[in-house]
Length: 124
Length: 124
DNA sequence: CAAGTGTATTAACTCTCTTAATACACTTAC
DNA sequence: GTAAGTGTATTAAGAGAGTTAATACACTTG
Image 1: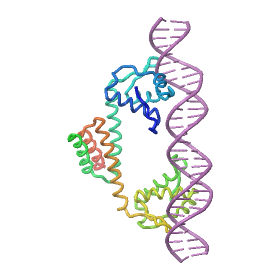
Image 2: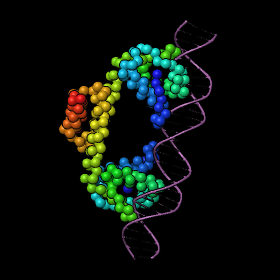
Image 3: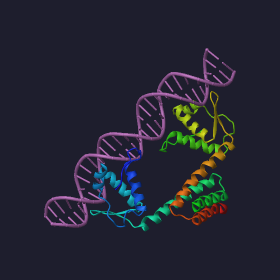
Image 4: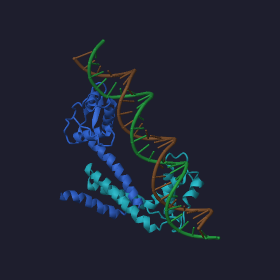
C-alpha cells in the first residue's frame, strides 16, 4: 500500500502518516473501507506493529480513520477531517497573526500579502 | 543583570536570550553600551562562558547585539533589529497563510479574522 | 607582556523520542 | 468455546539530537 524511504530521516510512523493522509485526501481510499491491520502493515514494511499503531492513532486523532477494537481501522468520511483541519489551521493562523501585529506589521501590510497569496492561485 | 529560573525546563542559553531580548526591547539597556563579558556573566550565573556566548551569538544574529573581538559585545541600535524582526515575522506569516489557503480557508474568512485581531487592539 | 575580551573545537552528558518486545482484551467465524 | 484474527497497553531498549562544559586559541588594550 505504501513504501518507506530509507533516506528520509523522519521517523517511520511519521512517513506512514503522511503517505496515508495523502491517499485519503486524494480520495484513493474508499470511505469506510478497512485499512490493513497493524500487524499486516507491520509485516509489509518490516516494522513493529506498534509503529503502525502509532501512525493509525494519529490519523484517528486527525479524523482520517476510525477504529473498532477487535475489528480494525477504517477510512473516515471526508466530513470528519475537513472541518477539523480548517479549525486547527485557523487557530494557528490567528496566533501567528497576533505575533505579526506585535512585531509591528500593519493590518494594511498583511491585507496586501493576503490578496497576493490568493491571487497567485487564481492566475495559475 | 538577570536571574535564572531553575524550574524552567528550557535550556539556560534560551532563558538568557529571552531575558536580554526583553531588556533591550524595553529600552532598559542603552545603545552602544557594553554588555558583561561572557566570563563575567558566566560567573554571575554559575554557568560556563560558552553558554553565555551561545546566547550572545543568537542575540547578535537577531540584531540585538554587535560584537568586536577582543573588546566585547555591545547593545545594537533599535534600527538593527526592528526591521529584521518584521521581515522574519512576515516570512513566517506568509507560510502559515499559504497552508491555511491549502486547507480550504477562504480569503474572506482570513480577512475577517485579520480585522478582528487588529480591532481588538484599538478598543483596548 | 599581561590581563582582559571573544572564538573554536571537542567531548561528556542528559534527555527526549522512536521503536521493539511482550502481554492483554475484544470480535468473529467455525 | 476455541482459534485466529483484530486493536491496546506497558515497559524497556536504543538511538539521536541538543545542551553544557573543558580547554586551547586569537585579538585588543594599557
